[in-house]
Every structure is written in C-alpha cells, then in structure tokens.
Image (cartoon, rainbow, N blue to C red):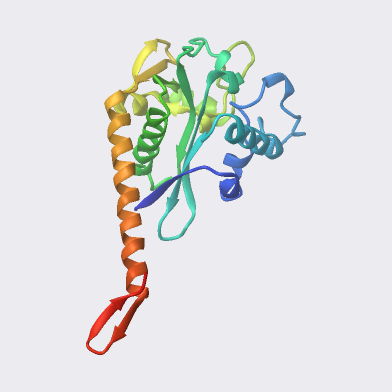
Length: 239
C-alpha cells in the first residue's frame, strides 16, 4: 500500500497515533518522567509535544511521518536528533553514541505497511545528508522468542532496573539490512552506525532543485494560460 513521507511538524503532531504522541521513553530523563498512576510507562503527551516543539525551533526536523495516501492516516514514523537531546541514549550497555552522529532513536510502522519502514529510513538519511551530518547511529534490539515475551510484559532491561519500550526500539536486523554496521556488539542491544555519503547529499540537492524548477515551470505555464486574451483568431498574452 502506497504511503507519502513528510517531515513531522507541530501541525501534524496531533495526527500521530496515541503512542507516538505520548511515549517519552527516549526523550526524557528517566528520573523525571511523570508518574502515570498505573498507566503505560514513559507516557506524557505534554512533554512529548514540548520536546518536538523545542527540537523544531532549536535544531530542525526531528521526525518523518508515513501517511497512507488513500486514507490520510499516519501509519508510521521515525524520530531522530543529536545525542544530547535523547537522554535515554546514555543508558544502554553499548552507549554512548558517537559525538559526530545523530541518533535514530525510534521507528515504527503499522502492520501491513512494512515497506513504509524503508521509505522512512530513506527520508531520514536524505534529510540528514542534506544537513551535513556525518553519520547516523541507532540502538538495535535483537528479538528472540524469550525476549519478545519479556518485552510484552515491559521487563526488557537496559541497565539495572531500567526497562525498555519495545515499540520504540528498532530491530537490529532491519538496521543491518538498511546498511548500518555494528560498532558496539551486544547480545541484546547492539549499537549500529551508518556513514553518510556526501555524494548522496549532492544528488539529493540536485533532485530537490530540479523538482522546484519543474513546479515553478508548471506555475508559470498555468499563469500564462490564465492571462491569454483571444483577439480575433489570435491569442495575445497579457504580461
């Protein structure tokens, strides 16, 4: 099923599914995450919205959204940012993220839209390459039958008693298939890295410029057609 990938904006924040709007597993210091009084762990829609707003103002695009073209429903999203903006990234056994890298913290797609994951990853890569970022790193999760059972119960440990949000973790195998290489091995939470190619940024820039030229040409043609005045058998274009 075809999807459209667009950068996340504050106007589009409300269109995210409930978990995407509320989970602050990556974005907040664990010791200051609000008590949800028996609700889902890591949940605070207010703080997630504040985080997205701050990132957009101070750093730029921090998310990509996949939308079903037919229904207009958001079916996937990816979040990313510099390590300093993602406190949880310091707590993994394979931490820290390299200083020259941006962390791809989470990426998810709804069932039946698996192909959208590749589109989301590509959008993140193109965006960060255009912005001159040297590399992307991510903490993958190695899923197993036993691990999946513990994750469903919310007991996947990072360090000590810290637990994970399985929905916000990216499969290590998917990262490897997307070109990431393991830079810090671990049986459960390897850290992977993708070096960004400067040539990709150059090509992406050219493609973007060509797209703008095509759009401007179409607008110009449409404008000329609207201002055409028929005089006898001839058409005169009014400037």
